[in-house]
Image (cartoon, rainbow, N blue to C red; front, side):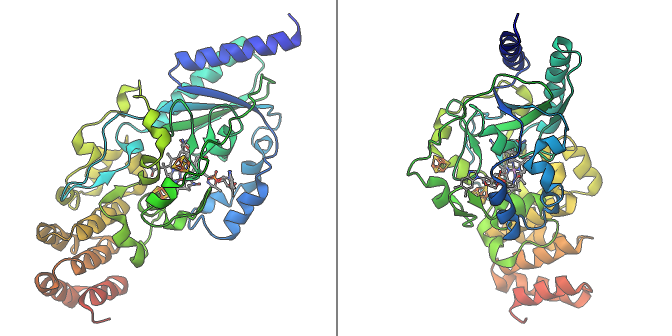
Amino acid sequence: MNQRAHIHQLSAQIREEALRLGFSGTGIAPAGRLPEEKRFTGWLEQGFHGDMRYLERQAQKRLDPRHVLANARSLIVLAVNYYTGERPVERPMQGRISRYSWGFDYHSIMDGRLKSLLEFIQVMEPSAQGICYSDIGPIMEKVWGARTSLGWMGKHTNLISRSLGSWFFIGVILLDLELDYDTGENDFCGTCRRCIDACPTGAIMAPYVLDARRCISYLTIELRGPIPRPLRSLIGSRIFGCDDCQEACPWNRFAIKASEKRFYAGEEDRMPDLAPLVRITPVEFKRRFRHSPIWRATRDGFVRNVVVALGNSGRIEAVSPLQEALQDPSPLVRSHAAWALGRIAIEVTAPVLDAARSKEEDPAVLEEIQVALGTY
Ligand code: B12
Ligand code: SF4
Ligand code: SF4
């Protein structure tokens, strides 16, 4: 068999094996320097990445995967569908969790499948070298996905596939072998701007440009410190991530249900009751969320989000759990609890805030109490 025919056959076998392993789609692109360099550095210069310093570090690796694997020739980009069908609804005193974190942590599912696919390739080509990543590696997964037939970058900046919509995870295998390459997908956003209009915080500054500092996903997952005060009320009942731009996207009407059973979850994992979550201890947080993407938010960050959602409920039933949160060991939780109490009928919450003021020693919490009482 000549070299071209061999490459063609190997590429077809890889795609077939990927399907067998449970991947929902495969794209293949030649490795090289990304022409999106200016967009990426410009985005960083504007500070749109907020505290996600890891995006600045290793920028060269992000721009050229050959800085990750010296002899890289191909990137295999793989999708795993996580759409499970249920529609998110608003219910009083319940929090909303974004779809991608309803079930089992995708990182370990992706890692297992990517490693199996790499092993398969190494059985076919024993000298092949490769590296697998999903999410945490220094690879711009969406940008690479958009260079294959998998999909295009939507205006909300997620990768969309014509057959899957955008509810899928991405993983990549960097490989030092030449393969058959895709031609890429067209952009099917057209004149639509539903995602931009649906964003509660105006985080999509322009088509294809996200200011992560305003994105609820960043604020509730990545941000370790206080959520900027003007953005808190816009977060509503979202306690981990946000899906509004993708829920609004017409391409998600074509979403089909995931075959991976571990992504399916009961109501308590999709929209948990807020009040008990205020009391969650670090040990309980670990027990409950160790195998969930929610683990990333940390216990204090997650309870901070719960407290903000309780404040946004505006309901009297939220006062009692918020009163408990005002005693939390974490100043981050206490300061957001003070803010949240200030959102609920002040004639009810003022005595609670006053009592906390007399005992509180942390300056940031004291400031929030005074702002809530209108005395700052
Ligand atoms: C950092 C990060 C975030 C940040 C920043 C998001 C972002 N849009 O970049 C935050 C915390 C906000 C975030 C949120 C989410 N994330 Co995230 N995140 C990542 C991560 C780790 C890196 C992405 C990155 O490098 N961003 C930096 C910017 C600069 O890159 P970029 O968006 O690719 O931007 C370039 C393009 O937009 C490009 N561009 C392309 N075409 C065009 C056209 C024009 C005209 C212009 C101007 C620019 C442009 O220019 C930009 C600069 O290079 C990836 C995993 C990975 N390693 O890639 C997951 C990843 C992107 N996240 C993912 C998911 C699921 C989410 C959420 C849906 C989670 C949730 N439900 O809350 C949200 C979606 C929010 C949104 N609207 O994008 C998935 C996306 C899957 C998919 N189908 O696209 C990934 C790939 C993880 C995974 N392995 O599955 N995330
Ligand atoms: S995830 Fe939510 S906050 Fe972020 S861009 Fe989409 S709609 Fe806006
Ligand atoms: S909502 Fe419209 S503009 Fe936004 S990603 Fe979907 S098709 Fe593109």
